[in-house]
Length: 238
Image (cartoon, rainbow, N blue to C red):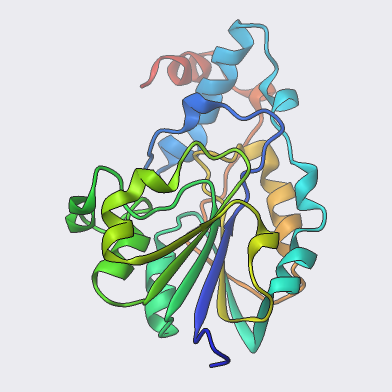
């Protein structure tokens, strides 16, 4: 296993030019939260004189992302690559591949929020990593935060006391040669707008590996052809 054992790596495409802290709430992956909510956000921003399509875009940090990944991660031959909406799938990928460690490159740790009791809740996109640790499925979790996270390691004191969790602020802080059995790429549509979906798949395809798409909702975005009745509905739903 080359020292580290079998490991699963995932990354969320969510590096934005203009990060909106008001979008940091937790959301389930439903059409309401990954598509309709963007019409509401767009309309609310328009009322404030802000064109959301122009103010939220892709970070230049993505240009050499996969080169950086290959500097630090050693991919297994015929490695399995998954693309999905929710990070929750990582729980099942880690178990399937008998992973001992998981590296998560994300804005959120997904250990569970509200203390250790959160791992007792039903499996979801916010507690899958904590569940893997609590159930003894993995031995160690590595959290590589994106540059716009608002989380801090001390936010997870309960987990840090009970489990082996390491936190990093940059990919370059990782060692080289991390043996990797699977890769999971998440869109996380509640935080990644639909007008960037084409860019998301460019990002996925730049990995230059075959991949399996799992439960990824196809979003439609055409704000200029949306009927007035629909716009009013999107603006007023909560």
